[in-house]
Image (cartoon, one colour):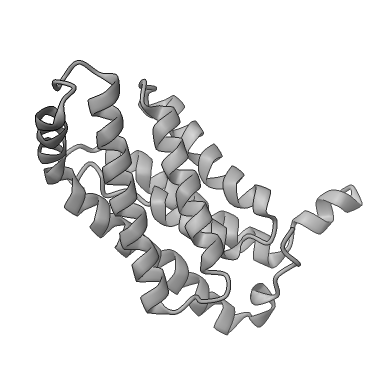
Length: 187
């Protein structure tokens, strides 16, 4: 095995990869078994927060959740608002960067609420602005947000729960295997 590859395969990298793979697999399960789990109850925003907080390489922090989203979208299907959705995921990674110094429960929960709310506001604005589904006036914008409200609780609950699973699971693993917590310098 080349030395460069061997340096990448560390216990920490493997653990992070497994946590991410589980989150991505869950996103696919949600889409392929309708009605079992609410549609927007996905780990994607939490994955962005987690990647931003824990990946030493900032490029990887963006690449992993966006690549995971892209792979799952190729399976689930593509749609016109994907660039806006990917921008929201990138926003979650940016919020995750702020968690690098403060990884407490309150900081993580606050970031999850901000991320979910930002996703709701931005994507619904995108639907209003880019489709003919609603009149392009304040009443149409309000109608678009009202129509999106039933999806917000699942988005928020999913981001909170998946943040707890990812951050909490990683915290438990690092207690058991302290070498996992040794982070490389952020780039």
